[in-house]
Length: 286
Length: 209
Image (cartoon, rainbow over all chains, first blue to last red; front, side, top):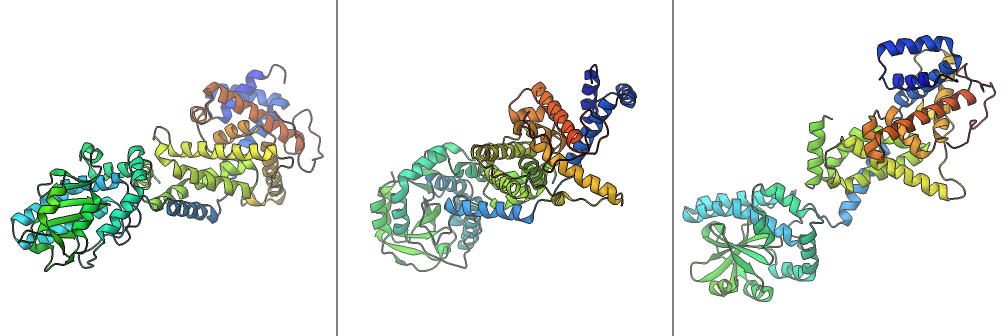
């Protein structure tokens, strides 16, 4: 094929569909006369055609195997993306997730609750479940609590879990390793991230949705809430004063009308009466 | 799957919906699997490599910036998995990667209805498969990305980290070598100086580029 180098370049261009028509005519004229170039072209064209057209169907096991590995991977990571249902507070949600919820609640739930507290009991009754479902949606959980399945969680147990893993949680928060902050950004829209970033501890919001501080003394907080008894009525019967964000769950705190402290989980029906007066809790908010 | 649907599915996965990844697998498994099959030469390794590639893509999906096509990004991951497997196999005395010698896995219906032509096509496919495996893996990768996956030279340059001109010359060399393999080892192409009609079992030129 001495002297045929330029035709070889044209063969590659033709195979790439990148040869001008007049050059192609020139090449084809040459191929008629040159068996070496013709052989090269026919072999290369046949190979290209086989590569392009001779495709195998992927076995069904491919996608099945991938999704099985994905599921196993997510299970091993401890379900970091979907939030734990409230009934199983065994693992600490990173502080970032709690802060994320705080942003959401501050922006959405509390203004509604405020409306409820300022207005009739009936409107508070409808506002609370709405707020709760919004919160759960924001975390992508399929296990959104509903108002017709009341369920009380042990605050102490939850906080024990916090204590065990708080150091790890702070690392998670800093590195955003599991994407909690990204989730937060998606869920919270324009919610300011500064408030999330400064919300280490158990953030507390007032009924206007303003951050009023955070509780850092978990022993005293536990002592205040531990040993509570079922209070009369439902959340609709009380005016919410504060919302405390703990472990990704919003605890609404209210006056029982007599200086006592009652609390319930956002969206639940069951109200618990604390053995301690409200004033002791207020003293904890720093 | 349109590009918009693809972007939406990626967003759902990144926001925690792991199951949304399946649609992405389904949309791209054919390109990924065939790339791996051509790189590795047999179905079992291709299946393993494809699954590993999709799994790696899942874990590092947040690294996908959307500045290339998603398929191109996936092919990069796939290529890396395949090259890793080939390197590991190459370090062992007995290669664990085997090349299927049967044409069966790629059997396509023969439209001509001519048994002789069907046989020739089947032999041609087998020869292409063997011929590809005589190429250096990096050259094979470039050629397959171009002719099978239909990527542009620029996209292949992105994947391999080479200059576009270097990619082009690699692909030309790979095409020339593959064509020469088909001419020397087979009885398909009547031209070529070294065209003898006895075809070695297992396929002629085992040399490396």
